[in-house]
Amino acid sequence: MALGDLPEYPWDLMAPYAARARAHPDGVVDLSIGSPVDSTPALIREALAAATDAHAYPQTVGTPALREAIVEWFDRRRGVPGLTVDNVLPTIGSKELVAFLPFMLGLGEGDAVVHPRAAYPTYAIGAALAGAEAVASDDPADWPANTRLVWLNSPGNPNGRVLDVSALRAAVERARELGAVVASDECYAELGWEAPWDAERIPSVLDPRVIGDDRRNIIAVYSLSKQSNLAGYRAAFVAGCRTVIGRLLTVRKHAGLMVPGPLQAAMVVALGDDGHVAEQRERYRARRGVLKPAIEAAGFRVDDSEAGLYLWATEGRDAWESIGRLADLGILAGPGVFYGDDNPQHVRLSLTATDERIAVAADRLRNFGDTL
Image 1 (cartoon, rainbow, N blue to C red):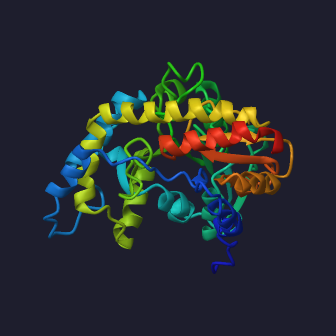
Image 2 (image 1 turned 120 degrees about the vertical axis):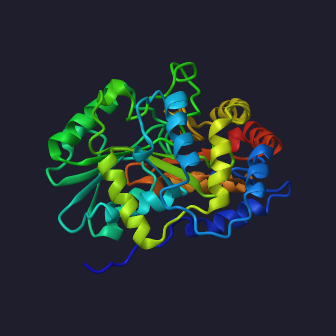
């Protein structure tokens, strides 16, 4: 089946609102895309620099050091023991994997790809690239019989919703009834804010409490973009079922999809150091502590948002109207309609702005709440 027409890139629709926000006399506060603004830690940059004599082709499967670092990290940080180097694979960021996973798994016409109702749009684009059908559903009982891939996202983008062990287990059990692969996008898992996730580890789909010792058709996707400020590096990985990982590796070898060697060296250092992750988490915690009460003071209700990098908010009116009203305050947010048809009145505000810009946004929201 030939690739059909794809929708326009949604963020292009934000251009007129961005122009309005940038016209603010005190400058724009961009809380829309969610691109990190803090520096990449020095120890990671130093590791990258030390590895720049990269005259040979990198290994698609990843260097032994990187694969071992991923295995150890899953055990230490995600509560997932027992992985081996054959259960993990580095990727060129996580978005390319999300977009091409249905294709790499051999899905096509007649197959369904399930994703959350409030969802990162690339899940549906990945289904379209493979010629499959995208189905938005949070209830495993509603997943159709032709489901071949289920995307979970916890903590969720855009809404910061966390799936606990019982919810993950229910999803896995239903997917196995259908013979579907489960792919869990977990890249915000270090960013838990509200109880119990401010004290407890956010569970992975690979957690033994979810799947026991059976990883069959279960994979977890992770990115270092947020926790290590490596968005520009395109540093991510996937772990889980050895058979699924093996298929992805074969496709990626044929396609020449390789994480550059210097980046693999930098990833080893990033995965081995928890200190910089804790520091970054505290930066986001502080920014959230400033922005959340301000957006609520301006008349918005914040829904979910118990973890992750965003506030999912509504003032009970059309999302585009809210986007325009915020833009007049010089604040850029993301409209909920970018994340599915069920979100016509929500906006997403990112915590990825400097402390100074977050403080400015909070002041504007508090001072002009009555006019919003």
